[in-house]
Structure formats: C-alpha cells, structure tokens
Length: 73
Image (cartoon, rainbow, N blue to C red; front, side, top):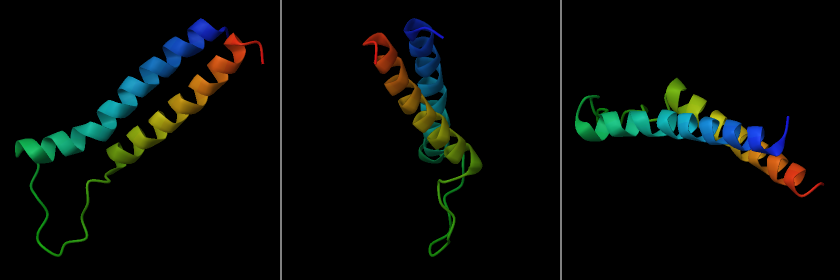
C-alpha cells in the first residue's frame, strides 16, 4: 500500500472514530439520551465509545506508518 492510500485510510478511520467518540456525548448534551442517576456507575463509555477510541488509535498508528513510508523509512 502506498503512502497516499494509507493517508486516505487513516483520514477515513479518524473521521469514523471521532464520530463514534462524539456521538454518545452529543446525544447526552442534546437531551436525547437520559442522564445517569446521581451516584450511578454509568458513564459515556459505551461500546460505541470504545469502538471510536480503538478506531482513532488505529488511525494514529497507520498515520505514523504512512509518514515513515513517505520519508522512505
């Protein structure tokens, strides 16, 4: 895979990852998702949030690989 393709792949993964990270927060702030009860152990870290976190980390790693390919390393 060449560096340009890796850059496009990392951009797409980054956008999808950020969307997955931000969606639960946006839902809570807009009032579409209920707020947890006081003292509840519920958090914003839903499976969707973890998917977004994982995709974002993968995008960062692939971006580093793409930059090393671009410099010939």
